[in-house]
Amino acid sequence: MHLTPATAAHLAHVRAHLRPSALRDLQDANGPDADCGAAFDFAVQVSRVVYAFITESGECVGIGAACDEPFHDAAGMPWFMGTPGMHAEERGVLRASRALIGYFYDAHPWKMLATYISSNNPVSLRWLTRWLGFVHEGDIGNYARATIPFHVVVHHPTAATCRYDRTLFHPGI
View (cartoon, rainbow, N blue to C red):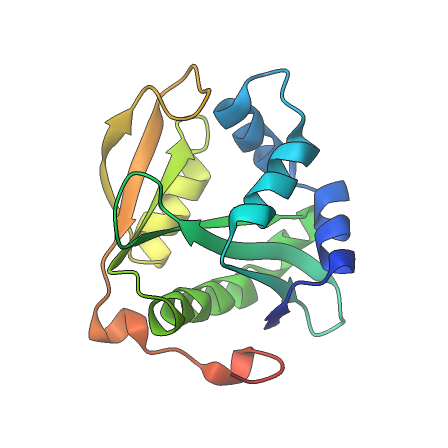
């Protein structure tokens, strides 16, 4: 697994093949009748950095990105949207996700990362808190156009979380 700046082809592939849970997350945040493709495009547009997760066989299985967090100064808001192919690559996705988090702190002035997880998606909450060092800080009921609660998860940089394997980035950074 390696990370590379996302191209239009990577974005189109992931947009067309989003996992059902990713589509549900977009609908949870934007309303049940939301145009999920437009929501994905908007997230890409406002992001400072957008990377593609590429398997050893060359398949793009996800997009990882971050934008400025609109409610907190000096905070970034990471997001990830994957395809069903990511499930066969969980260890590689985890390793690349950790590298991307380190890169966010290295390349941007963010003092912390904060994101919002649909209460309908306990798997993402577990992934972020158990494996990526995020802390569940509470719930809000009025995120975006949501009609359900969202979990607020926050990541604070530490020496361990800011070290990352630069060789996972292609071309290397």
